[in-house]
Length: 155
Image (cartoon, rainbow, N blue to C red; front, side, top):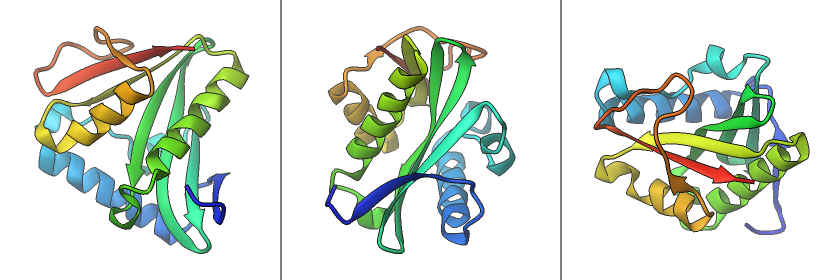
């Protein structure tokens, strides 16, 4: 991530953010069976137990990530997405580090996530493994699903 980029808490009101979330949901539905799409929509991301961050370069949106509190010591990474123009620039790693630092400040002992098993999600799975996430069984309300894989990171 370059020094001009900034990560900020987001209220989901800007059209660029809403457009990236719309693109994210469309890609999730295009890449996975409907019953295996667990991405949160705008109302889900607006809940009080969810925090959202965006990363910007000047006025250009590079990415978004959210952290949902499952329990007082366990968070779930949600809506991790970078724009096509931002891919390969370290934006996702910087954003993920930021979210994990916030989880540590909150006192979480663990952050978990669900992502797809399809080739479309291969880069995301590599990112999570590079950051220390390990595969785990389904957590929270998730169940075994051939289209989902689950990861967790002990903080």
